[in-house]
Length: 259
Image (cartoon, rainbow, N blue to C red; front, top):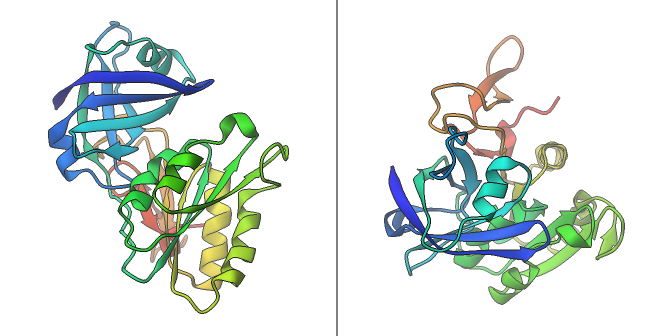
């Protein structure tokens, strides 16, 4: 466990915030797809830690997390000022595997899943693509940051307010046609239905990929089995449970069990 002092905590756009902790030890080993388990020290009712995907682990020792205010815990976090401290546990979880040189990374993200894949783009040897899905313009995040590191961003929204109207999975087929003949790897992070649809597509096509199956977590270290998901296994049912906090959250697409 490490104490992280908040150095910045600002609203990026309505409902979405970015907090930066001074946490050089975590930054030294953090990889894309991992998370930190945060306990807010102010407020006796905030007993359980909350998992947050690592958005950026800078060389300046600042660990950055993007979060959406959805309840009492994140509302309390949003109210903390620079100088406040939180108890941090991490980095935790199985990270994404960085794409090899010459392999085009394609990141399919939904909502603030865009935060969890940013370090993949930031550290990629080959520029790639971000397919970003959101309900509407208010939920489109981090497009400028991805463009700054050389990634092309394509957006779809449910209401058509930005980019193509429809589901983000509908952007993948046309892009793969454009990239025909090139080596590609797909990375996914976002809502569960999107990830299941992507897993099915990748398993059918044989294209390699990895998916971050974020799930509600409790202990964060694999002890309580509150965050299990189904993965393929040699069992009569064809599946077994895996813990997203310790076995994941990142899994090879071919291991994901799609019902």
